[in-house]
Length: 447
Ligand code: S3P
Image 1 (cartoon, rainbow, N blue to C red):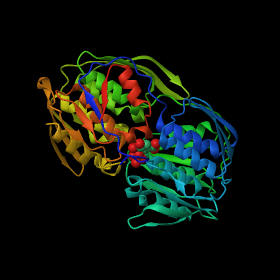
Image 2 (cartoon, helix red, strand yellow):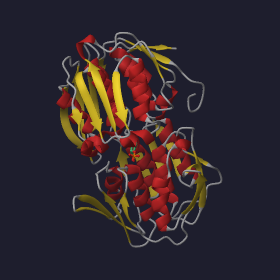
Image 3 (cartoon, helix red, strand yellow):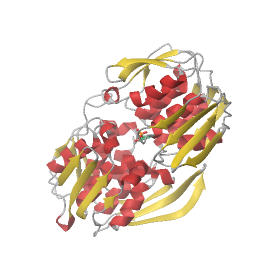
Image 4 (cartoon, protein in one colour):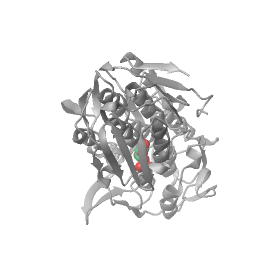
């Protein structure tokens, strides 16, 4: 069942996609703009905000902690913040819906303030591991009481007298890194986060932009981020670039659907997010980057993708996984349409996303006639090449927006249509997906 309603089956048929795909604002940056706005004193103005359910849930949470948010127009919001340490104790349960980013970042943001808050989410979020965040938050002095296995619903009692923390993140996770940095804002002294593998760096960039003292260095090949505590954040204007993780869907659909040519203007191309595009180029995709520029402190370009008949399977190295962690489901679809075998290594984190994305992709691709092998940390897809993917199956989306969109993109290229059992979750990150792809010529049918 969809997160907030009845399941919504949707079927994609063979199509040709042409035109401009104006994808929505970056989800990661949108969450952070509302949270950092709430932690600033004064008014932050945000343009290009993703108005997906995940981000709106974070907005509601910021209201519950005392910030004032106003919507001025499409993607145009103001946030009147309460300052670091200024959060009020919420008088209701904080419902983060489907969003791991929302839940984990907000827990971090409140963990060093003397108040108590209870967090919950949908069935997907309430099944996801939270110990990865509550372990480091405990080092600051926060206490948490959740369900068995460290799951939501969970109550967090913020530290009244926090201490600064040095934390080496044991899993490659920008959410964990960000939770620790946000908690460090209201601790004295310096909070240090060490990353073995670099993950998306929007929190570091934005904290600097909001006036916090953030230094990024390197120690023995590890990334070391040092944040000055008892920070005072100053509001600023945030222009959110378009989301590369959302652009991935129309771009990849164009590469695999015969005769297609799609442009996606103004897409964020932060190097910590751009691994998919490097992989597609290695596969032989006809993909170009035009008008490369910097917008709102992030590298941005216009992408152009053309149907690419002769893409080949590749080995995706494990050290690239973090920079494309949300793009493996759609890469698996491209791999299914390419010729030869694609091996994705070091992708174990996919098992704890909105769904177990390795299992979800393997199940649906197999149903569509594709050979997939998987183990804990690896996914291997044998491409159908010029014969084309048979399709003709119903794939389960497991409350996961990216699984739903990936299989619909497959349906635009496969020999027979592909149905997803529930397209409802797409609204968490890309509410206009259906109208955008149908506007490009993609054939979608309800049911
Ligand atoms: C995100 C970090 C990633 C990513 C998620 C967004 C973020 O999660 O999968 O969609 O905004 O920090 P992890 O930190 O769990 O890798």
